[in-house]
Length: 317
Ligand SMILES: [Mg+2]
Image (cartoon, rainbow, N blue to C red; front, side, top):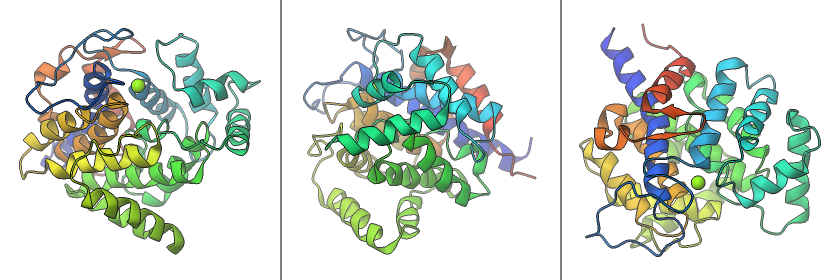
C-alpha cells in the first residue's frame, strides 16, 4: 500500500469515525448545562443510549454512506430515502423533531421526491426550520467525490434538503462537506473559508459574519442555542479552533471541547468530530473510544472503517 493511499484512507475513515465517537461521547451529556473543564469526558449511559452507543446523527450518516455504496447520489436520492426509512422503521430511541415530522408526513417513504416535498412543505409552514439535523450527518458526503468538489456542493445540498430544505441548512452542509474534503486532502481547516468563498457574494457576507462571530467568541458554549444550525456550526468551529495544536491530540481535545458545550452535545461533537477526524485521521482516535463504539444497524468501529473504505474515491496512485 502506498504512503499516499494509507494517509488518505486514514483521514477518510477519520471523518466517519470522528462523527461516531463525538456523537457517542456527547450522548451522555445531552440537554445539560456546559461541562466544566476539570470533569473528564467519557462514555456514559444516558436514559436512551448505552455507554459507547452512537445516536441518530451517526445512524443517518451511515444511512447516507450505505446509499452511496449502492447508488449514484448525483443521479437520484431514492436510496438515501430507503436507508433513512430503514433506520426510522427500526424505531430508534431518538429522532430529531423536524426529521420525525417530515418522515411521518411522507406518503411514499421510499421515494426521495416525496420526502423532499414534505421537507419543503415544512420549511414553507414553519418559522423555525433551520435545525442542526442535516449538518450533523455530513461526514460521508465528501468521500466519493474527493477529486470532484463541484459534486459535493450538489449532493450536500440535495441530501440536506430531504429533511432540512432551508437555504442556511443546505449551505452549512456544503461548507462542512467541502471542508471535510479539503482536510482529507490538505490536512488543514482552510476548507471552511474556501467553501464560503465559493458561495454567491451575498451569502459570503452572511457566512463570513457567522464565522467572524465564532472567531471573536470567548467560548464555544456561548452559542447555547445549538439545536439551531447556526449556533451548532459556530460551537463546533469554536471547539476546534480553541483547542488547535500541531499534533493529532487536537482530535481528542477538540471533541472533548465540543462535548463540553452543553445542550445538543452529541450533535455539536458529531459535527466537530467529522472535521477533526478528516484532518487528523482514524489513527488519532484513542482505542478507549473505538472499542465500546456501537449502534444502528448493529455496527462497531470496524464496520464503520470498512464502510468508509468502500465509499472513498480511490484517487491515490
Ligand atoms: Mg443525536
